[in-house]
Length: 113
Image (cartoon, rainbow, N blue to C red):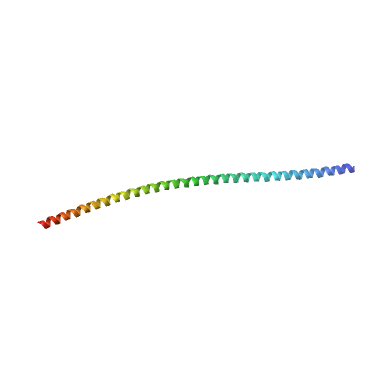
């Protein structure tokens, strides 16, 4: 009877230990599930940030290209305007020379008259 009582006590102790271990396993599985959910959430956030960064970098590159093209167009326009100014300056000099020549011719004509 003592042996049966001792065996029953051992069995009860093992059953209690088994129940405690099953409870601990359940808690650990819940913890793992929570961690997995957090990992998934963080991976999603990371992918979103990487996508945002790629879009921002692409947008910045597009903006830079547009500004470079605008700068090139403005530099070309400045060159054309400088050429136009140089041509106008040459024409002004030519007309001033012709005017001086006419004035000189008129003075000669007036002095001989």
